[in-house]
Length: 291
Image (cartoon, rainbow, N blue to C red; front, side):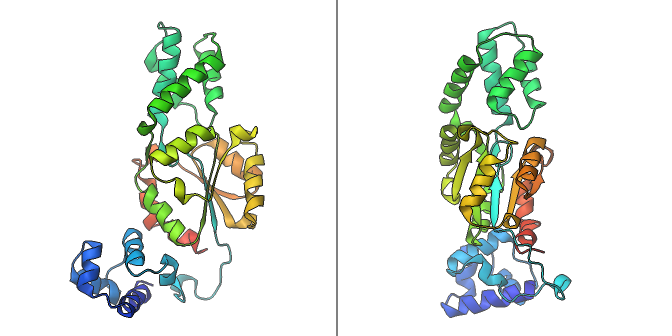
């Protein structure tokens, strides 16, 4: 496969008159490395292939056209994934510590006798719940009565003022760029309220990658109720087999199962927060092309 992709690189480069030296400058590598790419001696990473596709003004998928996979040459797999749906917090965005500290700030401002660290610890042990359910659960654990709607207002103010603390995990942009340049549909379907979700996406400059972002909470059907995901799928016009959901909790798993689509559940924090960087070069290429 590397040899065939290398031939495509040489063909497309020659078509528009880009020299190996010029290509090397764009890629930040040596002429020799470009030559090795074209000969199929060195494998082109997905981030490099994205750069190449931009220089040559070709979609990433053009490099895979008519390329045969020797491990699958006798059979055709039609299980293509054309629609990628993501949870947001702790899946694309590193939110666990910030959200836990925010809840602790709100609760301890209501009752200073409560241990800040205990609230953070209780938060870290819960996955997939809405912010309202998180507050209710933690208040019950520490046996504290409080006006939850008022606490949520305080929480919202803190998050609005500190939205830049919600940063992307390593490799997210590269993954979204690869998927988008491959002609895939990208969506977010999560329990976070849409006003804050949009601010997080805009602050991280990734809003434009998504065809649609959906708040299950705003729709009135929190996960794992599949209503919002099913409605999204219906609007897309794609078959359910073309969808795959990425999340980080058992709630996300139930959500995808209830909607009848494939899903992958993972923990960024057990993977040095760089799981998507690994996926870009290992898993996604095969998953996208149905291998």
